[in-house]
Figure (cartoon, rainbow, N blue to C red):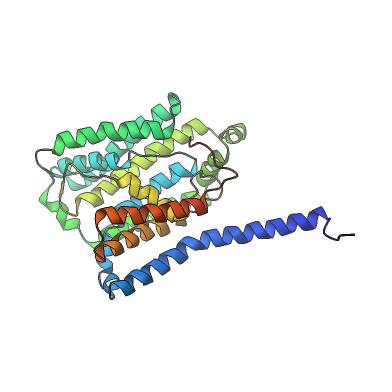
Length: 322
């Protein structure tokens, strides 16, 4: 007679297997980042390391904006309006910077939060799916950006460029990440987000005010991207009609490359933001250094994106995006 009929033994074996697979999944993006960095550094004859400051200068805006989208995706939503939020907020920052730089930062945050509130209102109060709402606002505000900057770039104060140094940009990014990590990891904020992502009805029955939380997260994500607009503006001191273009795609790819589960929920980790943003920028910069065309780069990024989606998609809990 078989000795493996004990249910507890079988359950323990399944739990060990599950924990081992979870560990592999969590380490895969980090291993991928290291391997891809080494490969591109070899292929470019060390240019990746020698131009490290250039590589890092491209990650700040993506990483900051990805922090807000990370919160949205944790609760099972999506936001395709991030590029338009960045573009509108960048225009506001440039215009207000002619009056006062600190006031321009606040104005950028407020403008981003307002667009986030519009997204949140239609998503929560009008019960429209998040991806539909944010696609609509993406096109709406992209039209405003083109109207404002189609004839000529919207110029900001000449003093904006004085803030364009790696110390300021890195400090701002680290502060956003540190605050986001603390609240997500050590407060009820993160618990509520994961609970909503795992099952909104169950979260509501447990006493979480899900509608209020969802609305707040969209406002917060907009405000964070509004702050990223300041980092975006200080690079050249102006905004063109293409400002923020495709940022939402970059963020989505970065988060998935970082191991972010599409369905959100309990398996998300804040490290997804950092590792994913770095992995995306290293991949993009490496392909550029190798002389690949834009079309070929998009093809390679699409293949890598599909592979990571296949690896990190939770087929047992995957559902239609809220």
